[in-house]
Length: 87
Image (cartoon, rainbow, N blue to C red):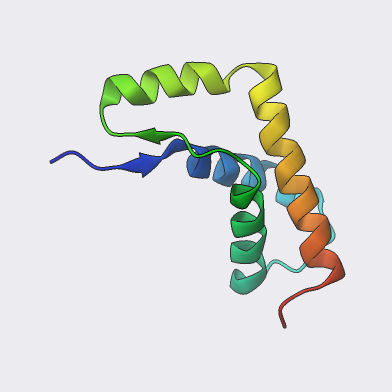
């Protein structure tokens, strides 16, 4: 059965996991979800359904500009949550 996925969300998750150990920010579940939500709201969604769609989208995200855009959004979100955590 086909599943609708936002590939941007997967890339945000990947980048967040890569850089999180180097960031001085609360890593509780609420703060991590806030970071993810803030970052995703700054980025255009990339919805995929088929495996072919995922491959094409993944190839597009390997472009340095696209990954840099996601990295920038994640870093901004981390900074925002660090300055004003929800708890």
